[in-house]
Image (tube, rainbow, N blue to C red; front, side, top):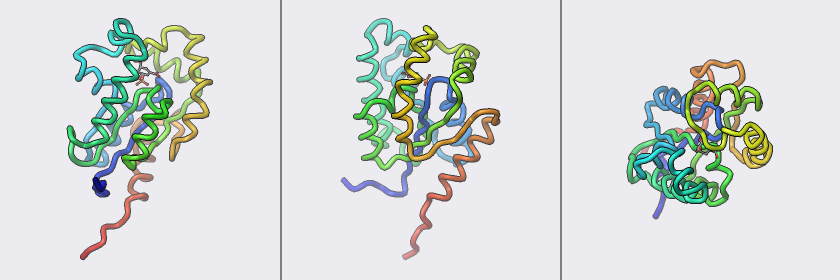
Length: 184
Ligand code: S3P
């Protein structure tokens, strides 16, 4: 089926602590679009937290649920209209998800920050992240995902910037990429 080109999907990607959810909410407000958080979509569907899914069903099952939830958000069935989506830190690392994003014509924006800053934010925000508990594993994942994050279409450095500023930078990119409507 042909895609409705007027419906946009802007997906924020990046490592844990990059600020995807926080920035995503502000960006959606600025654009007048809806916001969806992929982790929350998984939690809603399963009726349990990401940490519980990891503990009870394992990471592989979480990844499967994550892909299903992403397909749902990209299809637009649940939320008509343009959408800002905050992906979980590992979602973009999976080729099937990247293919789904490409097929949906989603714009991918990488939020960047140095590793110590990401660690600091994760420790400070009170969320339980199964893959952030062990500092060594956190560092190894960061290194392992580096090259895949480079595949994002755009990137924004978040270091020493207010959330509103990061959102404004992305908003400008989105607006600049919007083709003017052809009047018939
Ligand atoms: C993960 C990141 C988390 C969440 C899950 C796995 C990852 O989301 O999806 O704990 O693999 O990096 P945030 O990036 O929003 O913390």
